[in-house]
Picture 1: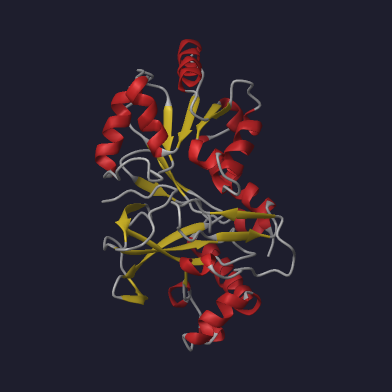
Picture 2: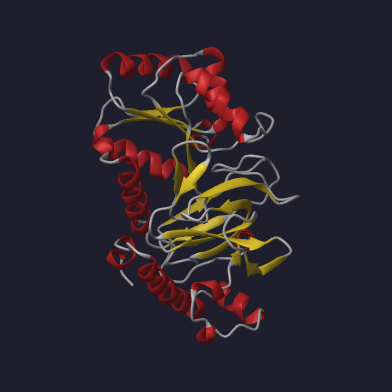
Length: 325
């Protein structure tokens, strides 16, 4: 399997064919996934369509090396979490798959990166090692080839002045921010910048109370003077992201798919328009596991867009983009 086969997918049949090829490869070569499938008494040879593929619970990334390659990890991404929380580790043996995935997805949803100034307000992520979000944001900043693009920690005055500059010069701008930091910013530096794209990545990191999406987005819309808030849905265990351009409705790139499962029967999949646990197929995860059962609750719509509704009870609350419904 090569990148061309994955990132050129443009229809349902191509997705299913590639997904089944990757499933068979990972069922054989990923020890953790192999043992999980065996424990379910499922014969990989008998799996003939994606509805029959078993999804690995995301919690396995917290305790075991989920890899489908013998190569050493080029980078290890780790999840964020509050003090004392066990975090996930994603051993990425070929980081070029991640780079190809997020660059292609950004171009698909937003166009040429060089058309934008990228501002990243990501203090919680900048203050620790191993953040896949920082890796992505850093690359997008460099790819923009714009000297005004850059990271911000708690220097809100500098960010405010940069936003005013962008507004005055009418430069297309994307502000990527962790939720609590965006709220902190607008409390002291309200601005009315209608053309600004504000992209929240979720996460209060214990700094603020969790909020429902409608309340959060209203505060951010009021604070930045925009009509809608964009969102990114991704996680440490994935190498692809889904994007929302408003109203909390996300769309996946063609090599990523969301399927919901019955909360009371994890092996039973649901039809569209029914709320359930979110299962993710991420074909960019070719060297780990492409079939992940998350602890998020959501609903998939007939056009394959989806909405994140919250979390299962007693599960960790962490980014990116996990809001309480």
